[in-house]
Amino acid sequence: MFTLLVFCKLATASNLFKILLKYRPEDRAAKKERLLNKAQAEAEGKSTEAKKPIIVKYGLNHITYLIEQEDGDLLLHCEGKISLGSHCPQENCISFVLDTVRNADKLEFSRILEAIKANFNDKYDEYRKEWGGGIMGSKSQAKEKILARETAQRMA
Image (cartoon, rainbow, N blue to C red; front, top):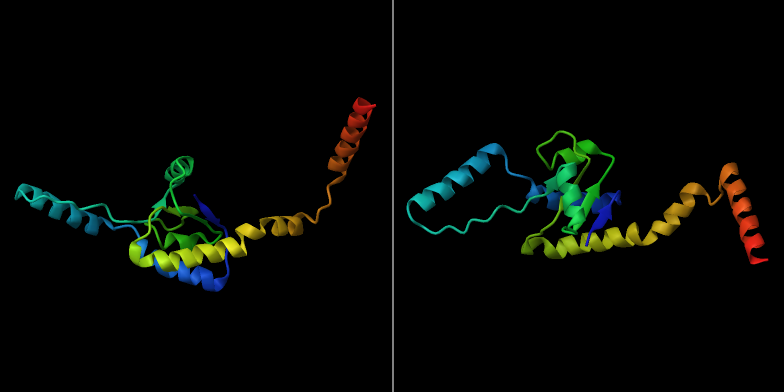
């Protein structure tokens, strides 16, 4: 189940970005070191259960796949590409997905999700009414009148 975050209050966003600093992807040197350590342990005959680190997932194709599989907790999409880009190896990042959270961060992450749901997701209809003003354009009004006449003729 995804929670879509488009924008949120400053306090919620700052708490979220503090948590996301822990989930930044590995750089090349860290990944190379992790894989070398794993290879050395396997060469020595030790059993290794080294799991991949928990990181944010980025890239439109990867995000689209995760959405189709309904795998993930938070889909973050903001207008500030640079602020998102600081959490992945790209300079500018449009959106990313956080699919797993460490046990130590679950309580704080659930608080942030509840704040996001209360401030944006649950108030979607209110925001939508404010944007359009609830008034259709002249062409849409004309189409509505035509449809109303047709339905009245069918009923009669």
